[in-house]
Length: 216
Ligand SMILES: Nc1ncnc2c1ncn2[C@@H]1O[C@H](COP(=O)(O)OP(=O)(O)OP(=O)(O)O)[C@@H](O)[C@H]1O
Ligand SMILES: [Mg+2]
Image 1 (cartoon, protein in one colour):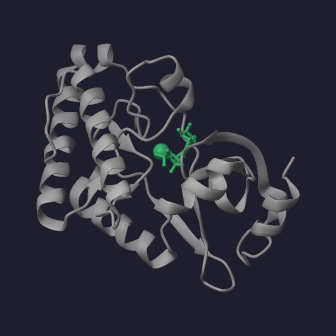
Image 2 (image 1 turned 30 degrees about the vertical axis):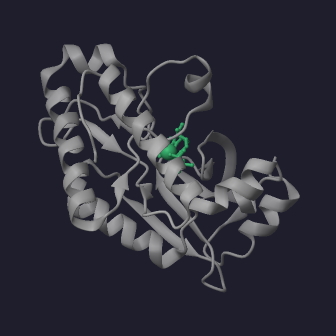
């Protein structure tokens, strides 16, 4: 089930029990996500797991080192507080690579109809978008709320694939952010253009959810 490359990579982490790594439950632009035991998922970087050109060349451009990743999580906790689904970060023996463990969620795809017909959800999303603007103004970085979902991109459906819904619980916000991917200021002109494109795509997706925003 695990490729040789994945197996070799995961063996570098003293904290991972390879026997607990199960079937693939998802994949984004950055991470391969597999079950870990009954109740958790494990996420690790595509470049270390897959051999396709995107994973080897494009994905690493946005990859964070373990310390950078911890700083991103701290920022997300500061700005998006109770929405953040906690992760445990583990590093390999050289402290060069990371993997993440997270509670396995029953994901619900958020749709424009859900947001537009539920005022509390709309308010939460508006608040997150507003906090994202504040994050950009204060720190020069922004949260990727949309993420990457090849299925829904191909279907040209609007999506916000880094969010899901928690069970209805008055104590907790309903929107749950399970991916704290943050975009940092790009260093080259090509990446600047690419980031601008991603920002515009995020904004246009949010508009289809009924949320008007301009990050910058
Ligand atoms: N805790 C979880 N429980 C169940 N499924 C999950 C969980 N976390 C992620 N997934 C699945 O894996 C997919 C990719 O996860 P995630 O968004 O964390 O990866 P990513 O590569 O960082 O994404 P991005 O494209 O935003 O960079 C999700 O869209 C979802 O389908
Ligand atoms: Mg994601």
